[in-house]
Image (tube, rainbow, N blue to C red; front, side, top):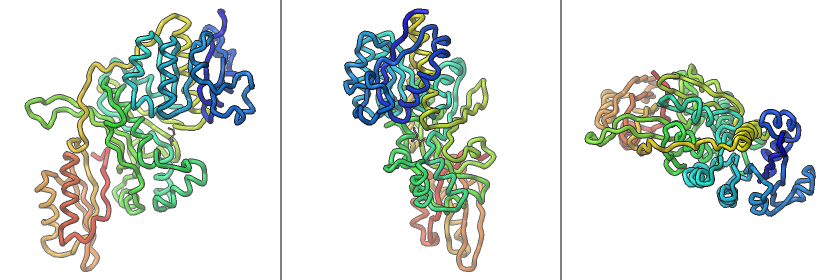
Length: 435
Ligand code: HSE
């Protein structure tokens, strides 16, 4: 066996320290699997005094000097965020080192440029840990399913929001109460914005869509709605129709276009809460777990399930990538980066077909149901089911629509809010997976 491959570790937080420990604990197996030993050349951190467990001679605050060191072969980036991660990655590529990253925000913002920089230097950029933690999903999309045509990916890719929604369903709690519990138990960060408002899931959706549809998609292309507006009433209404509420990352190929002269396929990528039937495989994904449901023309339906966060689960994905890029280094090859050849248009949310579940408090008088139905008809929205429960002067109407452009559905809701006979629109949520 030749001499060791040297790894620069950028960041030593929850994931970085797990990577460091597993690299040491499994060094013999890793060497056998790669064909050469792997050795940590240095660990770049901001505050070395916060890392008493790391041998002092490995610690440095000069990450740039570490990634460009002549004896470093591979770089593991687990610092997150846009800068300095981007500059460090570009410096690593320029210096001929492959990079393994867990950085969803950076890959979702600048994936195309980073892949181009890696390709120019003939090195690898792998980032399995950036989406859904331990779950192998990017390599299956990039490699195992490269011969198939993907039509749809629906993912629960944020554990914090899945925990909150699961607790709301289990206990009847409102969003605020469930968030407070998630914070107390350490599932939610002190500032939960990135998770709760869907930014984290949107970055992951962009990465999934780019790989699935061979089309560059960035986080800015993703329609994003979080879960802070989901109420206990929404969750209860969902249960009444045999559904549960989940924050979904949905990436789909949509046939045809609004322009009849140019009927081409496009991709629609969105993150929002939605009701799904309790019989759907994603409905049983509870607590902080993640899952990704993939539909492909030849393969059919596939489901990937597991831990989407945490030091060791995420480190498992990082190490899997490290083995892959190290093997490439040993054989003198570089894996081919993702292809953007299809370059499909990203369809705006307004034109994306969706279905709505709407609950209304209405006056229980002749003509009200007809007037409500008329409002849907005027916006070109077809109703799938209607259920009314009367209680004296008032009644509750629950409608589920057929699929229609999202803008037509939201315009219908705006119009319903203006109707004198509608005393209140008490719940509006999109529905996925209903037959
Ligand atoms: N904050 C994410 C989650 C994990 O709650 O799932 C890291 O992507």
